[in-house]
Image (cartoon, rainbow, N blue to C red):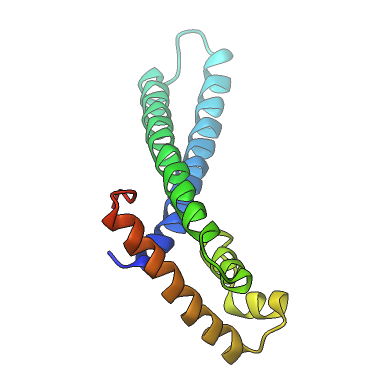
Length: 144
């Protein structure tokens, strides 16, 4: 894994958590519709559908908890490495891109750089981050 891939996994995990959350919301809505249908009908309705939905919600919630812990752990590692970067502009560039998920255009505007300027800054920032990441890895601080 490269340092860039390490940084990118933060947003990937965050997206996975969001997608699981969206599925849980959808399933809860479906379960509420089934419950509303069952309430007015003596002994009617499909209870197995409801049970399957609840089981899936529990499963997704557990998966979300595991991924959330992974996100927090990865985020802490990334933040610690970013904080170790010497240049404040490089720190900000890495944080805006990989933690906050901003586009290059947004980052360039926020930092008052041209597109080519922000790409040059990013290259330097990524090199700085990579050096810290490799150093932390050689000391056993990274769990890749």
